[in-house]
Length: 585
Image (cartoon, rainbow, N blue to C red; front, top):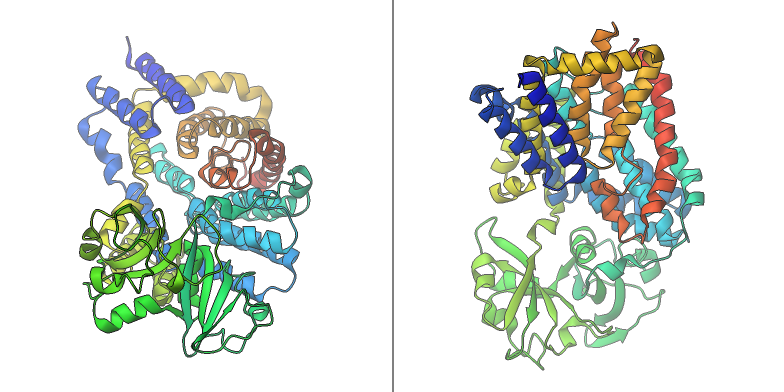
């Protein structure tokens, strides 16, 4: 059997496996690479070159830098700042979606959706808009923003990295913006005015999926809350925290009214999700008394990077049962600080007065060694350390990220060099630990990219690309260049529904370039069309950003088909109008 036939059979097999996901996409890619090696279609040097490519290193570095921004709370700070400054709630929701698109142009759209999800849900309730009419537009906004720059999505970077092997220059940093920016703006108008009419009005409580904790937070000197009433403070409206009690001196006020004025030294008993409590600690000038006392006593001393934040449930047999944390001398016994407590039943009691029960979940902070010594009467449910933003590091994290993007965008340094340098500085300055950095990289994407770059080499070297593109050219030639662009766009969109965006783009790229060259067209407009089509996956909820809102919004599969089809058509029409003008055939 000749090499071309073998490669085409492998190509079809990989396509089926990518579409069905019978195996994970990275496993399929590795099997494909193995077959190419064992059948002698690639040398080891050619097969493994993709793993050391600048595309793989740039992608890995951008994953780490996105985690640095999240770790420092930069993206969350942007969302909270918008929420505090806005006056009109409906206008705020639209501004929030626009901000999401803007942030997503430079960071992972999945991470952006995750961080803005609780903020947008709160804003929509404040505006009287059902959450189900806000969360899908949130996910779609993040996807739209990803088409503005080459680092907006991993798909854009993958396409850019694969172009040199096909004899084409990589994508410029803002090259996609010619079509990506108009697409995002018109897409946002669709989400503002048309999508709400197509979406169901299902009012759901996001907090149903989040564990609500009770915490005691003391108002520190200089806090922005001092002198404000509970209504003016926006604790519930903007920060997602419910004040259940306030202790002032020896007096405790339960369920204080909206006109209750906060003073320095007040201890607020607040209830809310973990992320809201942690964000409140860093943004509002409040402190956990338990944590403060532990640090004053030196019980929490630990080397930098070793302080952990975990959830632990109290098991039967604990000597703490029936006692408050103070009566049980928790801090003295374990050398750890309890920041908050979750109990299934609602309560208006402050954390310091609650008597512990079996099943109570404690949010505990302290050194890894102390947490390991909690004993047999506690079960650690999960480590939340990476979810605890440290806003003190936000300016430096933002400076490093913007510096890397700026140096790469304006050609002062190659993008790969700029982002790798930023990662090295982030590690040296302890903005992120090496363990967090390695876990932040989406290794399946790296493996997929490296393997498919090698497959592209084999596709060209064996002549399979010429055979397949020759056959496609014969069918599509009567359509003309605009018809060819439209056909490639729709095929790419169809492929992105069952398979990953990156895989769809890498499958279509050599076919589009080969077909264009065979018919005598410039490949560039078709490359741009495939990139835009692969990055905009709206019709099914299989895109990671869409999966994040699928459950909280109580959506059905057909909700995405109904709203996403219209947005896909908008994207298609804008691309078809702009691409031939900016990149002539």
